[in-house]
Length: 94
Image (cartoon, rainbow, N blue to C red; front, side, top):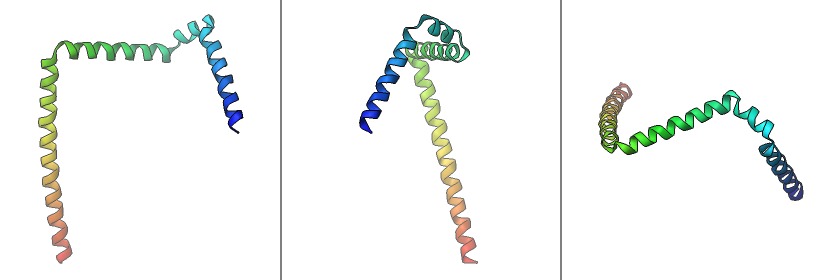
C-alpha cells in the first residue's frame, strides 16, 4: 500500500510538473476567471497591507475602536446572561 501511494505521488508530481512547464496550459489558466480573480484578490490584500503598514496610526485607531466595541458587546452579553439566569431561577421556583 505504501509503494502504491509513493508511486501515485510520483505520477502526480510528474503530471503537475508537465502542466506547469506547458506554456499553452499556463496561458489558458492565466486567462481563466478564477485565476484572474485570485490575482486581483492577492493584489488587493497586498495593497491593503501596504496601506496599513504605511499608516500605523490608522491601524491603532481601528484597533482601539474594535476593542471598545468588543467590550461593549461583552458587557451587553453578560447583562443578558444575568437577566436570563434570573428569569430561569424564577421559573424554576414556581
